[in-house]
Image (cartoon, rainbow, N blue to C red):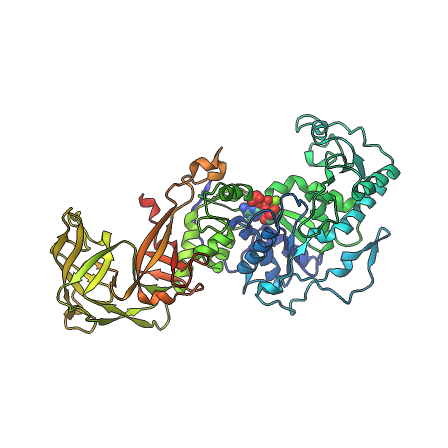
Length: 604
Ligand code: ATP
Ligand code: MG
């Protein structure tokens, strides 16, 4: 795979081959209104790859005054859970809030025209699903968002299956899973017709209805499309449409014991919702003929949706597979799906990454048909850019070493003005206290300094940011030889407004007062994997970075005691931080380092 290193910012009006198709369709009058969908299967939490799909689908709706449905492709109850439905709904809302939430497709209940009929059967959902006009906007709160569910269409999908049987295009097959596979052949070897392929329509209708009625055990029978067992495309070799699963469904309840397969349910759900452009990733290219076959075989009355494929987003050092992410969770490699090291939307959010930065990154990555690894530096650049304007500056010391300013009296407090955000149009300031005892970062001091060391060293001078220049006079050690404190003199004439305020020294460092600071837990994260493409490893569990989390007790300026969850902070010279939404509690502050100030990894 190639690595894209170009840190291009998100273009204001992105264009790509899918957007070109949409524009052509509108220009040619093939569609009056664009309707897209984001169709997650609720079998895990959303990850950064899904963010790309969300931003593409909602982005296209947004740019064309269209709508986009959040639809759960919930056809496999064995692997799906309500927890995932909830987390996905929350994550989608978070990502699109204030950006594309007005494009969300909504189900309108109540006053509907009488059900239409299709092939003699009522077409409930044609009648019951309408979308909002662009003017009927939803607010950004998740409470208003009502996702669509493929399982709401089970009745209709069943009716369509009966139609396929009546048309001689589907049959009930009694082969077990293993024999079905054998009969299917291989890409090099044509398949063989199932011995049940030529059952009469009447027998198929009877058996399929009895499958639904629960007369047969799991796996005893299936409904298959009758296409071509010798087709070069394996997906067309009489694919399964329905299988028997005696299991309750998280959304549909215990009404069903047969469940449709993805390829059958997806295209029809798209059709029922009036989707115009069904956008998915490249692995579905081979499924497209089946997508079209199902829709065309039913001879449906309305305009059919079309499927378009783009390449997956695979950021470096990340895993984008729900199955593998689940292994990290169940294997206790991380603390949960929302562990801030996870590439899940809930993990990235908890880490402090703003939704706007994530959108900018996934949109900027572009839409192509070629798989490529996206350099993680591109994302970091976007996140830093976003946080630079958003985050207030604060002082905090991760690994403190004590300084005694010997010319300041005990209890003396000198107030210094510190800038909150130099990026603001009119920057504001706050007071920080300089006192006799302060902490500096232990690596801002060197007893035996290397050449060109401009921070604190024996006999040397350094500026405490926003305060004054200090000079190191004495290093105090305990009996074991460990440094306990550094005794310094503060030159108060070098303070802002003082007679020597413009005195220059080569080093400026951050600090906090010992008495006017708080202790807080700070979690510093590193990459979760040691290789750029963990997903390509035979065993990705073998390339986990054992040092991906460092827990530190830091000293932070006391104003951070009132930090709130939606605030972002830059601890000057240290990085960007956010309060941890899960582990912080009254009296217990836990901060996550969202990202360092610059790329420090390359130095390792
Ligand atoms: P996973 O491989 O993680 O299980 P999935 O494709 O099975 O992902 P779905 O819930 O089916 O997960 O995905 C919903 C939508 O997100 C699909 O349209 C899929 O194509 C898209 N998608 C999944 N992964 C990516 C990715 N890495 N980049 C872009 N889009 C993605
Ligand atoms: Mg999938």
